[in-house]
Image (cartoon, rainbow, N blue to C red; front, side, top):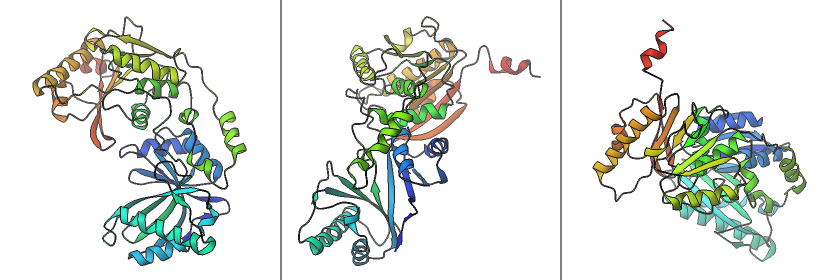
Length: 394
């Protein structure tokens, strides 16, 4: 067995959505992380307790931050049980704490992840029984300590989940419309777009306001962790409250940006939800909202010219196919006629409807909103034709 902790430093694995790995890697570099390696839906690095706290507090595209505590080779359930028992679990929690086990399995030797989690739970409980003649209790909803097991072929990594509840749950969003955009995905889209945080940011189909809020947080350098009630590591035995307080105080210097962030939606209910979420995030002075359909939205009238548009067009399965296709055609016309000089981005899981937009994307990326595969597309809307734009360079 290999223990993953040397001289106060340890291996940390940061989980994200597929397609956001490069953005997350850049965020970690900016945070000062070292020995960074990119993987599938995750990025790992070597860090200490301070970096682990900072990663949870600052990373916009992180879902979870896992602290590796042990690695070993296992080929069957008995080996797994014995290996888990070689870890001294009383070092991490005691009888008064609750715990839960999550597992991800990609192996011929282990076919059921739930069975793996159950076997690990039994090994931990049995170790406490042998030592203290009592056992700690499992709480799958809100445990004091969440243990993560990852088995790839015969390689098993045991980690502690330092985040607790998924980091996409910032804490500001209490109201949502149907199929809302995940906060981590929204932040990833904005960072991926290359927005300069100076030009206007517009979402003309803003729904409950997630893209607007994440844009305002980015522009004003507000860490996503500022809204959280708690992190998983706060219930650990070695929790350092003074260190966390220091990160809150020293690391959350806001920019107080005056960049224009403008949202609109045809639905009065959606705008009401957006207002409530924006208020929860204390961003009322940073975001402007309008109740109007995109057909009536004119960026010039709201003084949002020459900026960036990022949006998640509404999709309802009850809308007929030809209506959806026509809606995307209208979208393309609106982008061409109203948003000249804009970098225009949209995300959609309706691949057939996208073909009706009538514009050739400059960039495209596959992203996932939860389990839903989407395309994130960029259309550069030039003044005049693209040919005219480059005529003077010839």
